[in-house]
Amino acid sequence: MGSKNKLKRFKENETFENVFQPTREEVTSGEFAMKGKWSSDFFKNDHPIIVELGCGKGEYSVGLAERYPEKNFIGIDVKGARFWRGAKTAVDSGMNNVAFIRTQIELLDFVFAENEIDEIWITFPDPQIKYKRTKHRMTNSEFLQLYKKVLKPDGVVNLKTDSEFMHGYTLGLLHGEGHEVLYANHNVYKNEGSPEIVTAIQTFYEKQYLEINKAITYIRFKIKE
Image (tube, rainbow, N blue to C red; front, side, top):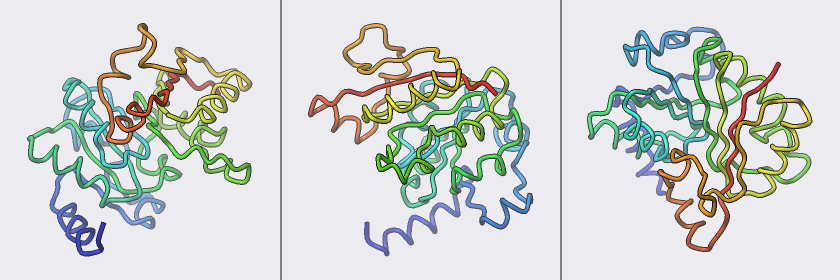
């Protein structure tokens, strides 16, 4: 994407009521006004809040929001020019149950209060295969405890990935640390028992993976202390 195009998207993002782009300082200083108030001040209802981490173009968040109007969705990504697409689609369609935040996932507990989220989706994250990259792996122990902080006590996490490595690593960690695996499947499109929510929405990249018969894996789990 050209820098001209990027700038245009950044400018347009600023006009969208469903996009929040706080500075790092604003977030870490505790001045981010939406923390703890997503239900009351933005969505203005008490429906469940579902957060997608690393939402990319926002197509999954928007797809889920269309499908489940009785739930609220928030996509998070550090790249605003990416989720511009999802934000624009939501604005153009008059959807009021989806929002986007441009921030780092490490700052999750600065943009949400304790127990504010019902569910987390992690869709096609970078598996960070090299050993030195473990700390960036989105299902490592540190991240799981961060998610636990903002999730309600019975909150769940969903991991959907095309990486067998990420699937195996996460399953091993969950079993090793005694977390509760609710469902695990290493090829959701070949298994008739797959939850509808997992197969109903496909991202741009997911369609490409399926064209080359790449297996899409899925784990649904609860985090223990």
